[in-house]
Length: 543
Ligand code: GLN
Image 1 (tube, rainbow, N blue to C red):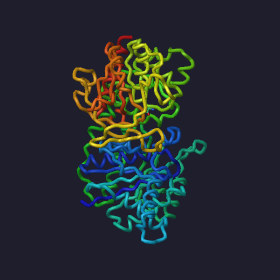
Image 2 (cartoon, rainbow, N blue to C red):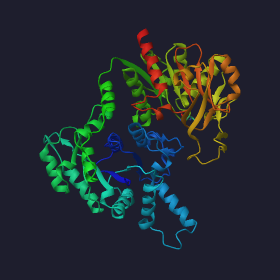
Image 3 (tube, rainbow, N blue to C red):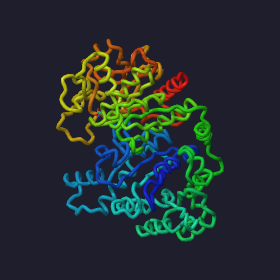
Image 4 (tube, rainbow, N blue to C red):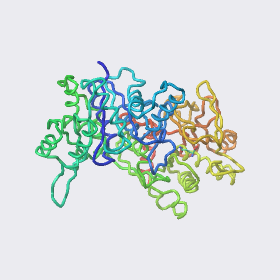
């Protein structure tokens, strides 16, 4: 079958869950045996979100091949289990960068370089680049229709329909049908306007997905269809769900996948196999217990900054049949208050990735508390670095142990990484380099020490995990730190980069330099998260 392209745009408001909706459609098509590829096009000018603040952008999701991407790629991977790559996340900045590089090389042969056709051609090139004969490519266009910046993308997908035909393209538009309580009515007007906006750009959506907090009556759907030139079966309601993993099931119940297949003239008689989805939804809805995890971080008021982390903790809950309640603890406030009361009520502490000195002493305190109280501790990236500093100070007795991330230090237990091996090549950086795209990024191997807790949890001796950091535990201090009880149980194969540390005499105290949350899936919870939640559950039964 020739590859078909599904374009997902959004209207009325942002944050309607376009990423989840796209991912859920991907999962539904997979459940019918089709192969899918998911892509995100973001209209902003940054080359990638790597340099953006978590407050602006939420989490930066990292792929195996080291791309720093939009968090929606995390949804795509979790729903479809297809590993994303650099070519699956493209911004306006990257499109322009590529166009301008070509212009400088004279590759436009003297032409006046313009948005149409040069930028739109480049967008179409990215949409179709690096494919492997997938049955479906789902392209989500970031932003909301009507934004000035998304216009070139809308124009490019309009052209694609002309280029390859209606048989190979589908336009899905996600909108909001709000309930106005004073009138006690659902309102269809915003959807009508949003579709008008799309029409003005030359796109007639084939299918509408209407977010709503309640059932949209058949009458209202007929009305939307009438005003928007769409048959009422293709006005699909997407009612709020209690867990995002229910979306493939509810979308299927509403006929979303059937209408998509009908559009492409594909058979619809055999129902999709959604049993794996029903299973996890069942487990989420009927937990057999609860564990409370304290997450000590810097961006705790912004949950988007910890999207994959929250999901991975929930996956750990799914694996153990429990609900995971997260107690968000702001590191700096915790550091200043000096009271450990909130930590006394949790069954495990997690210190996630982070950047900069602010709040770091609070994270060090949290690691100390977990170590001393034999409370399960999981340190991820920065959380590992802080745990090692804590051990160096308290166990080895180096009161001056610190990280060069916070400025010069006499004892750089954590230091800037200037050179490391990537496959057969050596990557080099200096502190004067550009900030964008210059961290240790993407998947790297780690060898696990036989007999360690890490090796036991992974049931493996060599693992591959994704990285995103600039600083590294200084292996020169290994001997003293290990003698004090913190073991380096995972190292890069050349032995130079510590990847995992664990405390010897502690029920569960593990720090990892990578981001395991990026590879956790609802159907395949990450072993570290399953084991951490299991340890927290055991702890909860002791107290
Ligand atoms: N700031 C630390 C570093 O760059 C940790 C980064 C992270 O937690 N992702 O090494």
